[in-house]
Amino acid sequence: MMTPEFEAEQLNAFIDGELELNRQLEIERRLSHDTGLAAQVVQLRDLRQAVTSHADYHVAPAALRARFQNLAVPNKGLELPLTGVKVVVQRWFAWRPLLSSFTAFAVLVFVFNFVALQSGREDRLEQEVIGSHVRSTLTQHLVDVASSDHHTVKPWLSSKLDFSPPVPELNLPGLAFLGGRVDYLGNRPVAVLVYRQGDHVVNSFVWPSTEGDRQTTISAQRGFQIAHWTHDRMDHWVISDLSRKEFMTIVSGLELGDGKRLGDAE
Image (cartoon, rainbow, N blue to C red; front, top):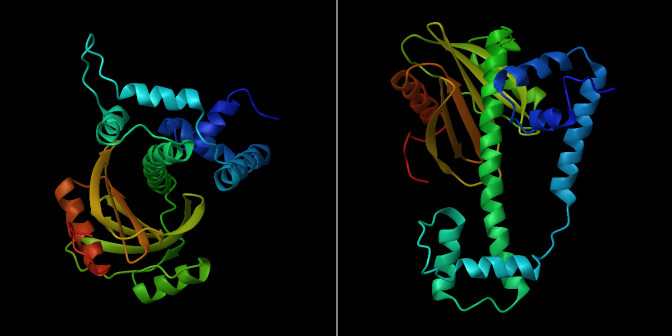
């Protein structure tokens, strides 16, 4: 039975990685010993996956189509700055005639929805990366296989996963390779390589990707530096609370080990 402190809305937000970090960690700690709550989370995750995979697609109704078309009509009595989707719609209608069929309009709506979903997925993954990093440091469960030998860590990870992750050797001053662990992000098991620079832990997540190569992006969230790139059909996320300069040095080393240089074009 659901406890009062974990309402349905909170569990859905937890699964989507949208809770505040303290609340997210509180629920994760509860999952380790509350089998009922764990079962609810599994059911909700299965439901979300089923909806994502099998939901029907419906063409937008005429009323919604008309609202998008009206965005392209200038309102001389009210000149407002246009941003985001409205700008895209106006540019589309500026050089194209009015859409003559629901099919063409459905394609336009699909593009908007796809971009929004991709952005939301990236945001959720970033929050999951942060949560995993914080858990590993708070619980001191940094590695499942403790070894500085890459030839020990790589086959161990490969035996636990359905892919063989790259495990580059980094020869950087003060950087120690602690080993690796298996974690769960984005609804799948992933490999995590763990390093230590002084008192700072660096977690490097990697798993197969269906996307093409992407340039590295660096962001800062909640006091952490986060890097993300895709190369050779592998998705990479790296996180630490190091200074930006030290962090980028390590990211560059990981990219070199992955056959890619920081800032290279796709």
